[in-house]
Length: 558
Image (cartoon, rainbow, N blue to C red):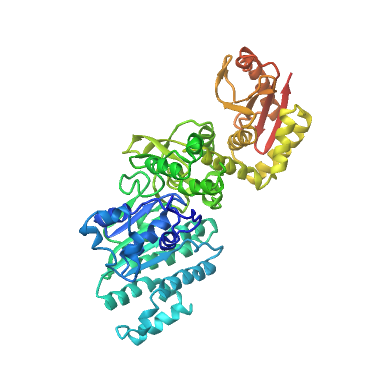
C-alpha cells in the first residue's frame, strides 16, 4: 500500500495529500463542476459524507494562489481528462468560507462566530494590504475585519467586497466556495433565534449574490435544501442537487466499486457482509450501494463495528421535529421493524415550523441521511417509498426514541420499568408505569387524542428497550381481531405479552373505569393470544390500558 495512515477528521485536501493519507479519488467532482452550467450550485449531502474535503479539493484545484497544485493532483483522474479541464488548474482567485462552526446558542454569539469565519477567509488574502491595486479605504475595511472591528453592515457585505478586491487584483473573476451554509439556519431554529438569524442571512446572501459581477461560479454545500426564497432570492442561475438527483451522485460517499478496493487495501474482505450491514445502503440519484465514508474510515482505523456517524452531531433538529408528531412516530415504529413505508417528501425544506409539516420532516430525514428512497411512487405528489439504510441508522432512530422519554424519565428508570415487566413484577411495573405516564402527559399538550400520542411514544419506547430480546408487533391480526401490541420473546420459554389500549370518548361521557372494562372484554372475546399459543408460547400475560385526558389506568387480565 502506498499510503501512510487514514487521517481521521482531516478535511483539508492539501494536508491529506502531502501526508500521503488514504484518499479515495473523487477528483472527477472537479470535472462535474466544470461541466455544470449553473452560476450557483448547491449540493446537499448528509453530514460526514465528504462535503468539506470535496470543497477543499475544489479550492486547491482552481486557486491561482495554490503553489503546489500540480503536485497535489498528480496521479488523480482529473489530470487524465484533457486540456479543457487541466487548463482550469490554478486559473482563478478563490474564496473559501466554512460556516460549520457558526452554531452558538444566541444571536449575539452567532454574529461573533460569523466574524471569525469571515476573518479566516480574509486572512488568506492579507497580501491585498501591500498591493497598490487596493485603495486606502479598502485596506482599512480589510483591517477592521482582520481585527474583528466591523459592524453587522460590513459583515453582510464582506464577501461581495472581497470578491471585488480580488477581481481587480487578478483581473479575473472569482470562484466562491461556501461549506455547510445551513448550519447557522438550523442552529438558530433549534436555539430559538431564527427570525433574527434569517434577517441577517438574507442580507448577507443577498449582498453576496445579487448582481455580483465579480463571481465566476459559486458552489455551496449543506445537509438541507432550504427554500430559495428564504435566503437566496437574489441568486441568479441557481440550481440545487439533492440526494434524489443523478448529477454529482457518485462524487460523495463510497461507491460499491470504491469499497471493493478499500477492503482489499485494508485486507478486511472477510468482514464484507458485516461492513455492508452497518454502513452501506445509501442511494444517491441513480447510484445504489453507497457507504458512509466517515463510519467506514473509523472502522478501518479501529477495526470495531459500532456506530460512528450517529455520534457526530446532536441531531437536535431531528429530535425537535418528530417529538410531537403522532403520524411520524407511528411510521418510525415501522421503520425500526425494517419495513418499507410510503411518505410525502418535500426536499425544499421550510425550517420555520418544520415540526408541523410531515412533508418537510421526511424531507429533512432523507436529506440528512436517516432514510433512503427505494421507489418513486408519484413525482407529481412527491410520494416516495423509504426505509432505513443500515444498522447504524437504526441505532440512531432508537436514540431518538429514547430522547422522547429521557427529558422527563431518566434512562435507568425506563430500563427498570421494562425489567419489571419482562420479569413479571407486575405490581412494581404498574406503579412505575403510572409515574411514567404522569410525567409524559405533563410534558405533552393533552387534547382529545392525547392517549394516541402517548400510545405511539410508548410503543417505540418499548421497541428500543426490548428489541434485543423481544419481537414487538402492533396492529396485527390474531384470533378474531387486531391486537394493539404483542411482545413476543425470542425464546419460547420467555414471558410474552398482549396489550390493549382504549381511549375514553369525551362526547359519550365515558368514565375511565368503563373504558377499562371495555378493553378487558375485548381482549377476552377477540382471543388475541391465540396466535402465540398456536406457535407454542405458554407464558402469556394480557394487559389493558385505559386513557382519559391525562389520566391512565391499567389492569392485568387473568
